[in-house]
Image (cartoon, rainbow, N blue to C red; front, side, top):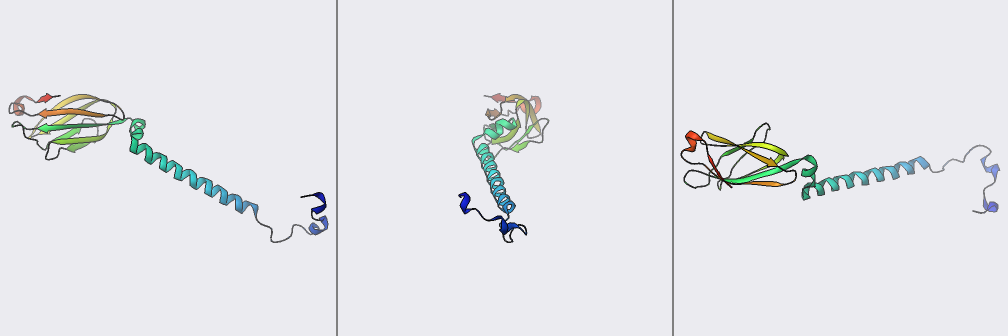
Length: 150
């Protein structure tokens, strides 16, 4: 605006005229939109990280899988525990089990079947799936332990 087009100071002798827009209201709306977009962006980033496994790496957790067979070679339903945690699972009718959220590092996995069980030491890497392979219980296992076939 040119100097000649500026308002006369006599208009403001009694103060600012009524009805002027409140600049703080517009600023509040802009900040609300910025904060809302930031929250949506953060949620989308977390969702993406959860889907591609990055979140597991950041959390320092991995996954353990395997298949359990009984003494006749049939898949069986057994209980699987990670020692020192609240993590547990039960294998399905095909003997398959999966434990997610296992803390990274050296872990002791306990597999129990028919009142018999055994500990197995494994190393869990953050963001990785560790396959324990086929785990066979033999008749002698109920007296002496178990056997493991990688």
